[in-house]
Amino acid sequence: MVIFRQLFDATSSTYTYLLGDATTGQAVLIDPVLEQVRRDLALAADLNLAVIATLDTHVHADHVTGAAAIRKRTGAAVCISRASGATEADRWLDHGDRVAFGGHHLEARATPGHTAGCMTFVLDDASMAFTGDCLLIRGSGRTDFQGGSAAALFASVHEQIYSLPPACLLYPGHDYRGITATSVDEERRCNPRLADRVLLADFEGHMRHLRLAHPKRIDEAVPANLRCGSFAALALLDDDPDWAPLAYSFTGIWEIAPDWVEANPGQAQIIDVREPEEYAGPLGHIAGSRLIPLPQLETRCSEIDPARPVIVVCRSGSRSAQACVLLAKAGMARVANLAGGMLRWRAEGYAVSGGSR
Image 1 (cartoon, one colour):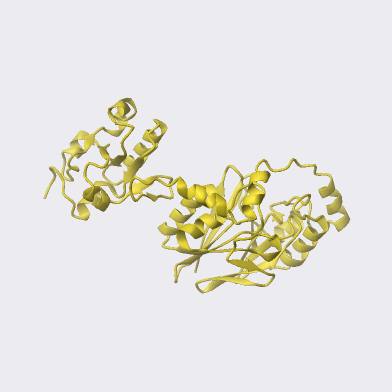
Image 2: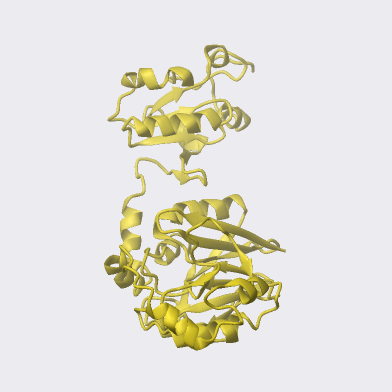
């Protein structure tokens, strides 16, 4: 079975795709965005998947790829089209190459036109394909820079994408209206630029008169992506908190495991955001922790030293996650949620003050 998730970066309207093999746990990421690397890897971890490769459909002009940053964290191989001209990849793909993950693979199909090095990735059973900026939902990628060609894109769509089964689901690199997927049949019938009834001359005329402004980040993104995001990856790594071994959750919260907290007393302020009766109740509380119930947190932030790290705890880790968001908004930079809360703390046998034995 293939595990599949579609992820979205709102800033660039980019879709990232996670595909994993449920049996082996091996996974790949298509078109990762640098700013979302922590999120993507957190999701993979939640699903018990190990990312072994990243695939970029092309050298992007509107965002910086997260490929090199993911490689730095996981050792995942960076894959991109040989025709892209990109350096610092681990594998340069040619038409017909396969990228395996567990018992599955993606077939690389050369689909130039938006750029000279665009590729579409087709799942082994042809049930889904990832078209990047070649074919969008009821549209197409632009063809006016980076070696773009309307004639090449027209041929790519008709020869490499429309040749897939009609029911094959198509997942684009972007959508600006919130639509998530389409199919070969839909686009052949309904795409105003590339439906079967549209001739090459029609398409070329349409593309010639788009007159689109260049992407806002093109001067930053293209040079970075020609190096698979290698330089930008270092900057992202430098942003990781270094005061404790933290893990980033899929919900966007930094978390810390109980063992470090128990082994490093006094290294951080521990704020318990439960109600007073819970703090004194059967689960007990961590020695040295300070009780500030969540409903009072915003008005009592001044009681917390902003110069020292903060670890927030509740019963299960849910309310404390909300508290982390509130503290971050209040300007506290070093905040972490105690993963699993007091339930996990007690289950793993760490000492408490009060509570039932």
